[in-house]
Amino acid sequence: MGKKILLCDDDPSIHTGLMRLIKTLGHDAVSLSVGRDAIARLRAEPFDLCITDLQLPDIDGHSVLKEARACRPPVTVVGMTAHGTVSHAVAALREGAADVLVKPFHVSVLEQLLVRLLTEQPARGSAARQTPGVAVIGEHPAMRLVLDRVDQVADTDASVLVRGETGTGKEVIARMVHGASQRRSGPFVAVNMAAIPEPLAESELFGHVRGAFTGADKARTGRFVAANRGTLFFDEIGDMPRGMQVKLLRVLQEREVTPVGSSETIPVDVRVIAATHRNLETMIHEGSFREDLFYRLDVIPIEIPPLRERRQDIPALAEHFRLDVNAREGRAVPGFALDVMQRLCTYEWPGNVRELENLVERLVVMAGNRMVQIDDLPAQLRTSVVDLDAGTLDLPTGGVDLRVLLMQLEEKLIGQALERTGGNRNRAAELLGMNRTTLVEKLRRRNVA
Figure 1 (cartoon, helix red, strand yellow):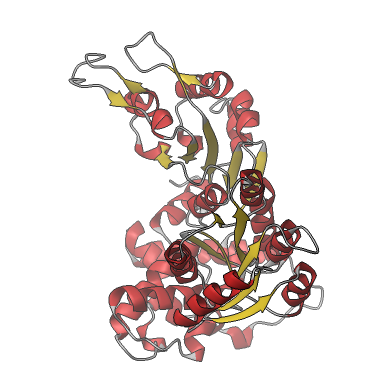
Figure 2 (tube, one colour):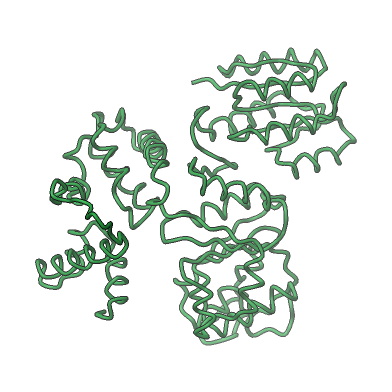
């Protein structure tokens, strides 16, 4: 399906060549030579891409760029500027342009750029926000706040702390911040602190020299140096050993690292984004997380809501994943039956977006080329809460404390699931439609873990 492109340039020769290229690629284009007309069209109708000269005859082309990026969803922008005006290119990139071409440029350069940008884009009208290679689906107000915060802070070097339950997409947001920043041409290096044994943490982050310890038969570059002039993403920062927290704080303050076994420091230019599903304030109170490191990381907080709190986004997410799996696995699944989508929208999703993505992949692969039906769903989704004697539920005259009632219902069903499975937590979690880790955490809170 062709995309809709807005072209704004007052050079007739540019118009002719670019319009021919756009049509050859199978896309539609609106061609204008005046910036104010371009802004009016952006406000009046949706576009997938805007190509604009940054020096227009009537207004500054940056105004067109800003208008395009202010659209909801933002329009991807490619800027064009004359040789010798590099400052315009730098400013445009800071304002959110996907790329800037310096005139004169060969048409093949723009062709490659258009193919890349338009292939990565969702269909116009979908509820997606993108940076190159990263898409986030979400029209719920809480997700709009997340995406707006990304737009606000991407072009700064301020540290970002992303919070949210497991599976909500914390790394996706981190990659979006990086992809929209001035560091996007640099590396994005991710490190999961929960997966690194404590004795290896210092070497993993700062590197080591040959002979620094038994088994160090060659030097190793640490993650900080690997991420130089880019972004270093600390996933599960709450799992970082307290001893390492002191050393990380020093690196963030001094902007230099000392490899294990070395006395020489290496300067590093790194933006840090951290993420956690833990309550760091509670950990500070308990003494397991340093307060000074928390404030160093929590300069820009971003809170991602769990999927159950933004159910209106589930249909768009499911469709996005269906199209992705169809393309990747060579399937032609046309969609989900109405009752299937209803169950997807009422399920609690303890594993959040990651769980939904994995389920859609399974459903599409198994369905082949037919519509996904209710019988394709796993047992925990085929049985909805409404099936549990819903007809006998009546609101008492004096009202009810819904929170307490739901807690009591949860307690009862967890107890029944454990009894029915002989205490097998894996099987009990399956009956309850939740991850085993979620069940274990609920049991721990009941002091029975």
